[in-house]
Length: 293
View 1: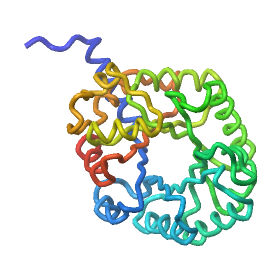
View 2 (view 1 turned 45 degrees about the horizontal axis):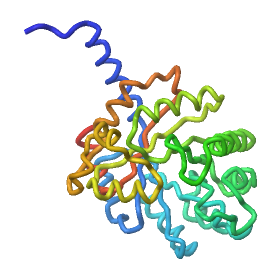
View 3 (view 1 turned 30 degrees about the horizontal axis):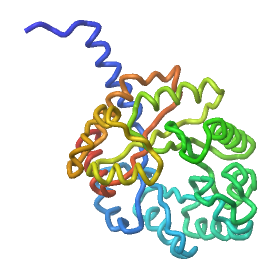
């Protein structure tokens, strides 16, 4: 049997090394309905793994804080989401952060602008929340912000770039660590190109690339439509699913392979992964165990 060409073997080793680097410190998200799955997950994923959580608009402060506390008590790092435009006052933000701190769950947060077209209070964007000084006052040490490799259906690209620059500058002006968590997508080549431009624009924050966890094609497409993520037939084929087979389950194997094979830390900087558990938290954890750990 002929041995693989030295060049191919070297490329395979480089890709394997890049894959290991990308997966060295992943994060996940979870819904309130899945909190019971935290305990079995402890047997699989490392203690301290960041677990991002969002809440329905009607959830009160006590419910939000207790959810974050449950993640903390399970041995993971809770990452509550703060939606700037939904904050009705500085006091509301302060009370929310105080409740998180009382639950020992204020160390890390994700600050986003939020969906409302107009702010409901004094914070029009993530940068204004970061610049308020309230985060570190209440024990926050790490503030993540959002990035959009595939763009945003309601926001022009130049506005997105300006917002990312403003968030980076806001973090730089505070005693906070920070990183960028991207919107999920299916086009790894698009992500790599976006990362190159991020670094070319002088933005040095670490980036966590949003990766869809395994889920049915129907569910992936529904969430993509709701979030404004474009899925062409070509991109779907590259990702590894057919638009005509909605009941099939699709995982991010090809996406990660393409990302790892193209990843160059000299061009793309520090990059990790964030898994969106669209097919369920424990199902995503089990997929990670089978492919990665």
